[in-house]
Image (cartoon, rainbow, N blue to C red; front, side, top):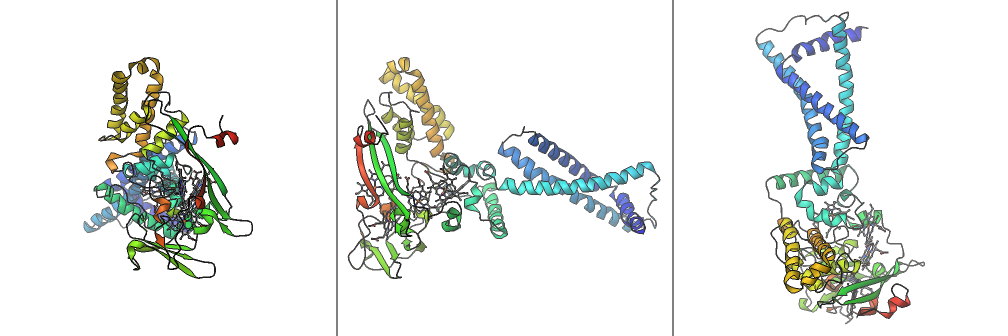
Length: 478
Ligand code: HEC
Ligand code: HEC
Ligand code: HEC
Ligand code: HEC
Ligand code: HEC
């Protein structure tokens, strides 16, 4: 076997000879140690004993593979320097020390080198695959870096909590992957040097078009039809009096004859607008293109006929569903919802008024809120209504816990995210939303305007009524 012989003479022997230096030996040690640790971790993971701690993830999926490869790189570097040094001193042997394949110890040594190389190749490929997929996981995107905590907290309680961040934020294919990594590296430096913006700005400028992201899973051609919404709200009185609003939203879509109808049908693909502020809240100019190609422009009266400067955008899903995966609620919405669900008992006197005040008070951190809210609620009942603490202690404690939870899902003092930082464009009660355009003030040349007719969007079956009859007619409620 002349090939094997040559390989032994020209490669194995010199490598072993020059490899005997501190740098290469340290490299070998680093690689062996990190490789063994990673393999042990993968085995425990296969046995189902892994931790989902994001920092462990960083160590095992990014740092250890890095060390492993660093060790591998150190080996040839050490060999190179020793070769150089010996060459300079004129100590390179004409013939490298003979390695005798009959020597059992050496034969085993060679086997070990061979096996180690194969194992190393396997470890590198598994580690790089795992590193790449780990960087795509919501744990890595959302948890390992406190800058993302607000979005991650909102994401976990959203209908998209099982959709990976990268499904919406990074496209498929090598190019978007590469762009995202370049972008991510930049952001890593911003975080390391504390140069990141607080709060993280919205809208996200380089988000891919919604037609590509959202329509990968939701088809707008699906006819949604009518959607019933029931909303409870509680008053600031002693009984926390509950009233309900019931409405039917005309969502529509593409009907059986491919006609566009309703809220979904009428906007997609043919309405453009110009917003004059970064958050796309002030929209003085809108244009609708009809199926025959003709365009109608609607302008706010403040424009006096001019066309405003600003980003011109074709309306898509995100112009209404801008908080699809990260809905930050208003304090009112969150409190009403928790009371309707019973997590905060409406039987606690004045809890709506007190709870709202506690949610909206100033705290220096989430930790601060977590200690002050329960203490303040207890102090309130102790002075105003001590019987509550005696008779409804469990409810009072549960209410305090829930208030802390609501606060921690919506307010992040370290990231300057507070009530109202990220407006939601669906609806028009808490934020301008639909009324950015449907405010009755956007008029076309022919005098028509973008409708503000309540019935164009929904039928209001009941507005803030106590025990609305329609809910008992529908069998939803007694
Ligand atoms: C269903 C799609 C979707 C998923 C899944 C998703 N996002 Fe988003 N994200 C969006 C949209 C849409 C916006 C707002 C874009 C806009 O208004 O232009 C956004 C905005 C953001 C912003 C900018 C600040 C803000 O609040 O608007 C951050 C940061 C962010 N997302 C992080 C994450 C992280 C971290 C995850 C995973 C834990 C994630 N996103 C998962 C769709 C998604
Ligand atoms: C990877 C698939 C996927 C992508 C991408 C995706 N969604 Fe979803 N979406 C889902 C799933 C799954 C649900 C939950 C359905 C359920 O719970 O019934 C959902 C639910 C929703 C809902 C209903 C929420 C509710 O309150 O019931 C809306 C609205 C929505 N998505 C909008 C969007 C928008 C806008 C985008 C683009 C920014 C988007 N989705 C991207 C999979 C996806
Ligand atoms: C003009 C505003 C607007 C646009 C544009 C829009 N939606 Fe919606 N969509 C709504 C409203 C309003 C609702 C009902 C919200 C609610 O349930 O509170 C809704 C509800 C939904 C739902 C939930 C339906 C259900 O059965 O509960 C999905 C899914 C959805 N939209 C997906 C999309 C996708 C995907 C796009 C883009 C192709 C899109 N929407 C574009 C306004 C819009
Ligand atoms: C960027 C501007 C813009 C925003 C934001 C917007 N719309 Fe529209 N909407 C339009 C325009 C333009 C028309 C077409 C006007 C017309 O045909 O008279 C329209 C038409 C409609 C129609 C049909 C009206 C009719 O008379 O048939 C409905 C329903 C509607 N929008 C609902 C909504 C809802 C709900 C929202 C918020 C979730 C919303 N729109 C947000 C621009 C907007
Ligand atoms: C351009 C469409 C549009 C028009 C016009 C409109 N609304 Fe709405 N409205 C909505 C949407 C969309 C929602 C549901 C938002 C959501 O899912 O939270 C809503 C929700 C509501 C709610 C319930 C809010 C809650 O959460 O309790 C009330 C009350 C309401 N609208 C009243 C009105 C009245 C009164 C008018 C007429 C002056 C009107 N709306 C005109 C789109 C519209």
